[in-house]
Amino acid sequence: MDKRLALSANLSQLLILLAMLIYAKPNYLNISFITLDLLFLIIAGILLFFRLDFSFMDLFISLEIIFSIVGYSVIFHFYSVIIAFLLILFIIFGMLTSLLPEISLLVYFISFIFYFIRYTHPFFGTDEVMIDYYSAYLFIHGLNPYNPINTANVYTFYNISSVEKGTPLTTGGVVTNLNYPSLAFLIQIPTVLLKVSPNYTLVTFFLATILLYFLFLLKQNSLYIFPYFISAIFLNLTYVFYSQGGVTDIMWVFFVSFSFFVNNIKFKGILYGLALSLKQIPLLLLPFWLIYLYKEKQPIRKFLLYSIITFFVFNGYFIFLNPKDYFYDLLYPITANLIGIGFGPSIFSFNGMFYIYKTFFTISMIVIGITEIILFFLYYKKFQNTWTAFPYFVLFLEYRVLWNYLMYWPFFNYIDKQKNEEKNEINQENNSTDKKKILGITLVSIIIILSMAFYFHYNYTSYEDSISINILKILKDNNGYVRCILLNISYIPKNPNLPKIIHPYFRIFPNEPLSNANGIMLKSNITYLQANSWEIVKVYPYSFDEFKLCPFELQAYYGNLLGITYSDH
Image (cartoon, rainbow, N blue to C red; front, side, top):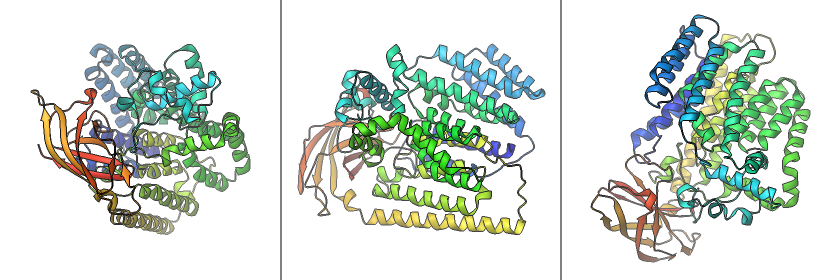
């Protein structure tokens, strides 16, 4: 395994962390923060295709771990300064010997134990894991969780505020249906029976993933790579926060990683089938995986057969039970009118700076995916050990780019996927020519995407121009908190295909950090608004989402329609 590739993956994770720190509490109106966020994420993705080298790589990695230990003590108070000092001595001892991989693993587990004991943990944390947990409960009681009627009462069942914790729809309400393959909830059956948090399952997979990398790197005589892997997890606490906070991606990451590590093609297929049975995201790897198997002269049909059989073992019953409900739910993340949030280029669309019709993002993902498939097939040797990073940029162009869509892809760069021992001696002239061709094909795809962005902006301006808002009065209390906003809203469709009646919903983006990525959701007294009419509307924040008056953007939305006004107060 190449240390240079591991270093690139580590630095990629470092840049993703910097983007997270910038947008830990997002400000969707600050151009500087948006630019830095996108710049860090783009460079992070590009680094996954490079091999970086400098003289003090191992020292740099050790310093990352030491810096993390200091932060755990001084900033997060996991343990005392004395314990931190002792742990740092352990790391220094590992640096001076050949035991850094083993010691770094031990120190991380010690740190994790202190963290887990010290901090309280939510029972759910996300609506996704709550719906998975409820789906397991329904299945135990003989109900089909893919029937949306059965999961519709999930928030009332657990007495949780849907407005505060849910994923809003632009047509009203929140997501309540199961959106993932069946293993996502079947795997939670033990926690339901034991009546414990589903996050224990996720934390178990998180720790198992770390051990998986340690054991297989040891088996492959590549244990010197492990400090590069674990130091990035040391630095970015989001990896553990997400696992104990209800973000489920670590489970499919475990099975995909396991599939890469094993050599037996049957096991590869079974493990990949398990990953697909948890979430749809690993499906993005499939075309690249098939090219990889083809180029490496491995049996594609056997891999597909065992993947498909494994998938149907867990999902076949539910598909047979009601295929319409099953595929409706699995396609829901793409087809539903989910509210715009995230940390990718779509920020400029859903914040109204440069509105782009939502279909653009789906088409852009397809364009990038096809481009990457072409590049991988034509220049296989260039990407032989880095092809698992291709889905990163596909997901980067999603309409809702969440951190968990991007942060796990560097993991796979710590796995050596070049199984043969041959040295690829590439002529320098041909190497330079290939790089130019790769760059040329990439630039063509970028030009196509930018052209489409302008098309989906200028040809869909009616979706942004049909709703108009004027703020009439802002009422605040003595402490400066906004209690009510009185506004005039009108709906004049600029396109005959737009609906005749809408029910506008409202939210605010203050020009300051947000505690909720959805923005500040607002209640209103409006029921519906007919075409070519206007109404005086009162909007006000929920009690859990109070905010002090500051410059803000107020949005009225319905479906793909978006109306915006700004206040400089």
